[in-house]
Length: 229
Image (cartoon, rainbow, N blue to C red):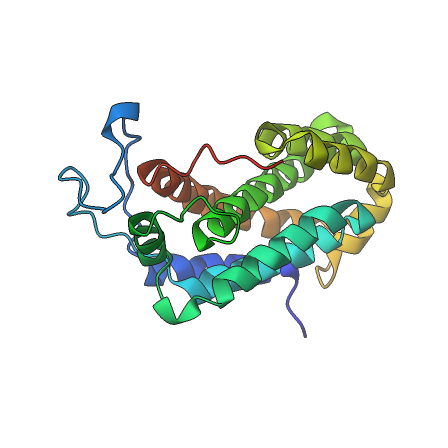
């Protein structure tokens, strides 16, 4: 039987935790960012690895979760797919952090076509997914799906979107399915609603821990303030 998107994401996160050497990094003060050569004395000894392929697989599982929300997520889904394709082109590097270092040295980390920028937006998309799943799991906002999606978007993506992107998402919110429809769709091969909640509760701490460390990496390489149009 094909695994659900939530179970697949859990497996990918478990694989990432086994293959990665993600060390918890304390946020650096603004004046202690790593330089473009990646040689800052305070951070040079930190060995951080994010294998590209497991990360791409995790993001592909994310797409399948967002698909369950329907046409509302078409804009975000397209962005995620484009960013995944950008990372796939650099997959031979094997390690995302090495890609961030390389693009930083070359002065192109912030360009529209960079893998660094793709990584930033994929992490933020994972932020959105986690926020939405937390609302589903806790029955927050009475599980009104339109409100849950809107609040998750406002909490995670909106601060980094310009007016063009924000306008597109505002229109998309009109297409959010009602709560019973969404629950029926997302259950997939879960036996029942309680099984679904059980699987979400397994996924959430794994995803939260990964995102905490991923955001530390973005701060370390001064990528955490990138915005879109």
